[in-house]
Amino acid sequence: MDANDLKTLYAQAEQKMSATLEHVRHELAGIRTGRASVSILDSVTVEAYGSQMPLNQLAGLSVPEPTLIVAQPFDPSLMGTIEKAIRAANLGLNPANDGKTLRIPVPPLTDERRKELSKLVHRFAEEGRNGVRKVRRDANDRLKKLLRDHVLSEDDERRGLDEVQRITDLYIKHIDDVQQKKDADLLGK
Image 1 (cartoon, rainbow, N blue to C red):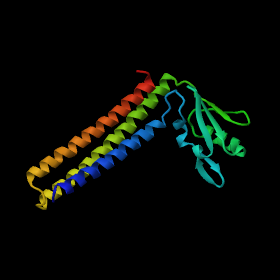
Image 2: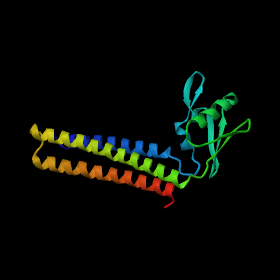
Image 3: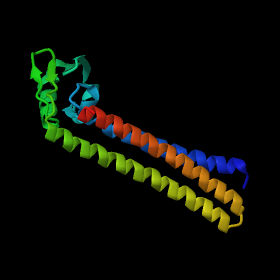
Image 4: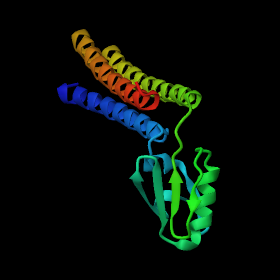
């Protein structure tokens, strides 16, 4: 086994850890912080044209004010269906239909709700850290197998384990940073 094979192993581990980080970012983007953001509506699906479709494919979404989201349906006949889907999404949002657009005020969060959402943020972040650790474990197992098969020397294995740990620490720090930023937005720290 040469250095390129080890680089491939590191690159694969880093790619999987990066995907885990992006998943955590996506999950946290859907958590409401009291400020309007179109990403709050990412989880909303609407029954349209015989199938479930994401809201952002059926309406133009914008944030004209910090506490307001405006949805402009591409097909005005879907206005009522979109309104019902937003209410049914259990996001605590109550859209107002003016016939042409849906105005979706984003109410301020109560302290109790902020704390609940903070726990959710911590849960998503911990799941992300566990995902990164699982990738580390898989990469370390591959290195140990290469040592057992006498493809790697003990020194190369030790350097490999250290490099995998360095990559792991980097991605766990990224997840911690994303979690702290979301918590700061949520709790106003």
